[in-house]
Length: 213
Image 1 (cartoon, rainbow, N blue to C red):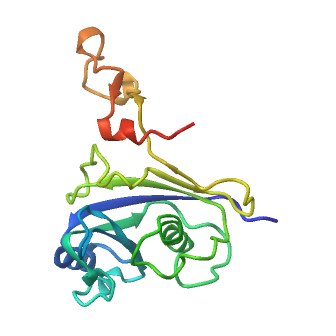
Image 2: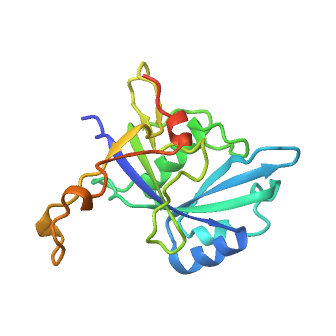
């Protein structure tokens, strides 16, 4: 029986300096991803540089990290927490499957210049990764993605190699559906001119990154 499609939601928090990421991870994160954005020597534009994981992720965020030290300017660290449950069944390795395949999605399909592992072979399971970005208070969502090359969704089909891997940037028109009145106790129903607009346009960046087709 083939494995079921794996859904992986990642809540990303940041941006941090490397020093702050280490301290934050030491107190608040254990099983997590970390992603580095910045500029290497001679680069003019900030770009996605490296992704890694750790079952005790603070230990991966040392100043002497063999890859992160190459990102010398405008460096940002984002800490990623898996927000979905692990697949059922017998555990085959100590690293959670969701964490392992999330790293594989970035290392294999983003052409990150500092990654070497998981950049050649194809992931051995179909999955969809959903990215969400939060500020360092852990509560406030970002209204814009941290970087134009960082998509909302990564979708990989296995073993159907004829299906393309899809990286999706949500864009265009969005509709906000408010909860019913009973879900907002103490508030008067929002109607007419008091209601928020049902549709909102995204930023020019999101429009530009709209998925073709």
